[in-house]
Image 1 (cartoon, rainbow, N blue to C red):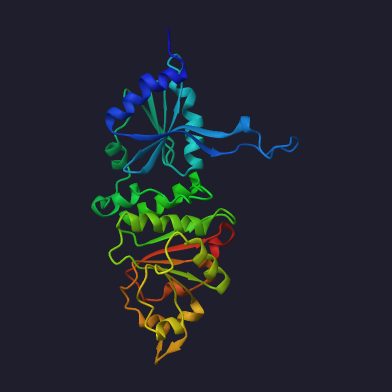
Image 2: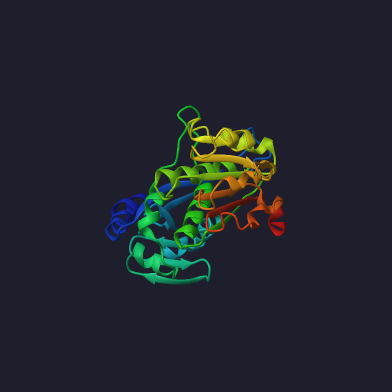
Length: 313
């Protein structure tokens, strides 16, 4: 008798994935599904978008896998696997009934049928890039911060944004743009990115500058990083520099106006060496040209922006 989908996963798919070196998440809830216009609940829970598997290697999500029962065709899962992978901005998707494995490249729509799952190294090789694993693997695999009171966790799309940013850095690219919709948690996403970078020991000096264009956003960001102690979070202004307290800390918060003020014949930002910061986060970068300055030119940069402003960044 052919196995049902659950038995196919446990007896055929799981062992095959483990044998070639994959780790994975099962039943990952990508989204709540359709909005319910008539019922009491906002969403129709029966329409929730759930991926059977998200395959990970060294902490990085590389493929979505849709499972089918042993007696069904693996091809029946191709469309759904591709749709879910595109929702998560993941290039590859797989559909399998435990015997056939259909791999789709969602960038090209090319697909091929395999007799076993692709190996992680084989899938990484298809990107045609060189990754500095020695420096970045620990950041990819570092855990996210979970608040002990709210238990707020990282949503799938935030996880993908963080991993794509790290993927850019790991290739030797020193700039990345986090383009996310209003209300999607850009500041929280950056906080979790910084958490992984620091806990993964990927930054040499462990100095991060968070730049905003107004005090309210600077204060909001300072509060969003409350998982770091008060001594690790420093607000940059003339008073801080004048007291000599501007060099001690890990996360530094400033707005452009404060950095452009003069103190002792220099701009405030000139009281920092060009290589002092490992990472500069330019919040709402479509509203600023500060990132164009040559100061900190070799530093890692992350710009955040909302989708409606992407053409003006």
